[in-house]
Length: 162
Image (cartoon, rainbow, N blue to C red; front, side):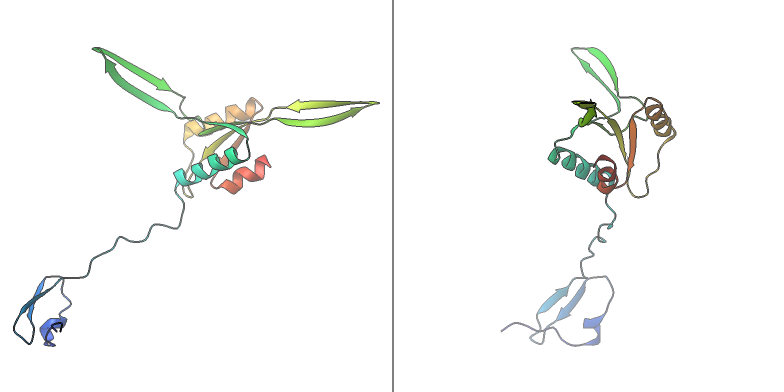
């Protein structure tokens, strides 16, 4: 049968050190402190989670899009060093190009007019703020007649594109 720890006051010490106790049969038992678990993950979604949901939705809806990165890389090959910049400061995360067909009736004739709206999507987490470069990029996009979506959730994107 299993061995029981004695019910002496020292057996219930709530300190975090190891406790060495003896069973009624005189055998030594070590009681370890409880394991500390990591705190639960924040219920707020991360920016990467929001971006993944947007990209998945765009793909499911068959809306043409491309994920864009900005930054720079340095390296070397066969002794020659290289440095490459890609994107530009403030550029949005996702570029969306849609095709919208409209039927236009003029007199007795019907025409199909194709529009191609372009949207730039900047994804931010719940507490994320646009940088100065991103605000300037948003202004340039608007001035060029394109759409700009500051998305904190997939719903923000769906509201504009549907």
